Length: 394
Image 1: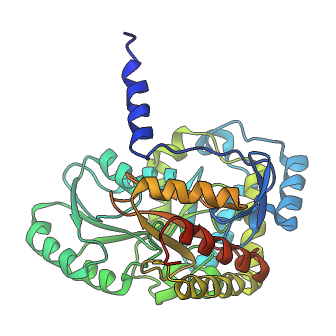
Image 2: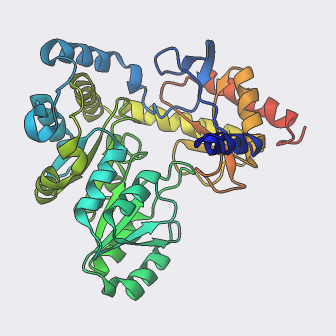
């Protein structure tokens, strides 16, 4: 047997358990409707909340940046990769977020990997929500700090663990997602901020799914709760509501200056391309000028969720446009996704290990690009397949 035969066996086991992910291919720009594996389907699983991924102003900005700055910086930020575009983006993001300063990275994932190990080390402790994103988990592991998980969205459990364990460590860092991407629920940030302050802990929130969605004109969860100055580290992404690619950290000038010296993805990986940065600047400009797209997103989400509940679907406890259609077992979710695709809807099944066993689902991502006709089409198809597969009563 070859030394890598175990990999083949692992993949076959995933297929038997209904946990194998079929990776489909997009053949068009992201929008309400897309070409997937050669077929035109309604797009209900991209993170393109506001339609920026194919927005004319973002495309125009990207094209112009290529003509002016070329296709890539060809260097890390600290050597020769910081262009005037990077600084413009960071200045506009800081103003948009109401923060003293920001630093941008190649992705939201990199932002967490950059920040957590720079802030804490083996003498410190991280208090992390048990359902935090994989990038937070990996950043915590890289830090070598002691990781103490607290129950999901449970400030009382966080306080108990800070009280019992916090005194053992040099520095304490509390981390939570702002919006939890699989269930669409929101962190109880006011209570978490109060407890963090009480026990002299730093507070960090990853608002990947809150940027462009929560707060005034999409300014995020800190703005949503009016907690400016109470959250020490805000991590955001530019690849979801902003429609492009990249990530950033917002906070005090001292924090950003420190990360410019210590954040390893900033120091050792090339800077984001001019076209991407220019498109992100255009997205920030649009959101700064108007909240129209954010309001359309929430209107669409309310309409779709109401329709799903009326038809008898379990959509969990989402508080955001993320709409989990709870199905239970992974094989059923996979079959539901396949039938949706046959009926003209692109909505992927999500199972273990992304979500716990027995909690498989179709995660529907609503967008401002969806029309009422699109949503009615989706509701009818979900109902049809739900009855066919025994999820709904006929």
